[in-house]
Length: 287
Image (cartoon, rainbow, N blue to C red):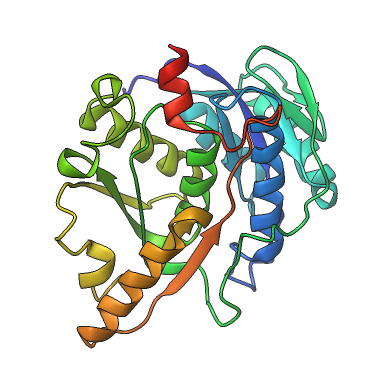
C-alpha cells in the first residue's frame, strides 16, 4: 500500500471557477486574482509562505479535489477564495473534513504561515501583466525560466501561471553556471538540484492532474532555450522585468521558421514597506 506523504500546513487560494464548456482557465480575471493574492502575501512580509492556488471547474466534485490534496500531504490551514467562489470554498472545506483532514478556516483573505490574516484586495488587472488577446490557453506545452532560489511569492506567482498555462507538459529552465556567476550573493545560492526540485514540486501542486513537469539547467547565455527551439511550446511565461528576453525568444523562433507562441507577462510581487519587489537577493542577504 502506498504510504501517504506527511501532512504540511498550507493555505489554499481557490481561484476563479471556469465552466467545463470553456477550457480556458488561465484568463485575465484569473491572472488578476492570483496577482492580487500573491501581492497581498508579499506585502504582508511573508513572501515564502506555502500558498497553493487551486483552480476548480464547476463540475469537479469537491470530494475528488479533497482526496487529491490530502493524498499529496496538503492540510490547508485556511481556504482563500474570490467572491464568486464562496459556495465552492465551503464545499471544499466540508470535503476536506470528510476526508480526515482538520476542517480549514474559511476566510476571504490570506493566512500567513504564522497564523496572521491579511486582507486580500479585490482583483484588479496589473498594468504590467498581460495575456495576448488571441491566446487560447492552456496550450499543450508551456515554458518558463528563472533562478528560483529560495522560492518566494514572486516565484510562486510565476510558476502558478505557468502551470495553469499548460494542459500536458511544462518545461522549467533553471539558470545555473555562467548565468548565475555574477549574481549578488552567489556563494549562498542554493544548489541547482534543490532549486529545480522546489520549482517542479510547486508547479506540480498547482497544475492539472497528470501535468508532466520537465526541468533543465540553463547555463550558456549563447545557447538558445527550449522555448526558442522546441516547436511544441505554445506559450512562454515571463515576469514584467524579463519581457525583453521573451521577445528575443519570439524573434529567434521566427528566424527558425517555428510557429509563434503566446507571451504571457506576469507582474512583480512587492515586498511591502516600500522595499520594492520580493527578491531572492534580499532573502540571501537576510540570512
